[in-house]
Length: 78
Image 1 (cartoon, rainbow, N blue to C red):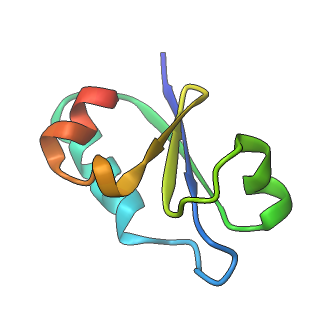
Image 2: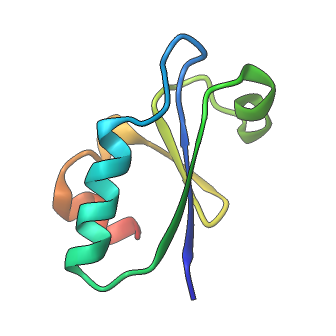
């Protein structure tokens, strides 16, 4: 079963972020299957009820990336 992850960026920021690569690396190193989408369009990000960017939506729950940017913390929410 794959963990569904959405990376929410501010509309000014592009996709293809280092955050995606970081999550892919952690997932690969820990044999976790992930499906990652990056969203930056306001109409797509507003649905998650956050204005803090970047944010992560993991299996429907929103996390402030700045609080979970360290490898151990990211792994704990994957």
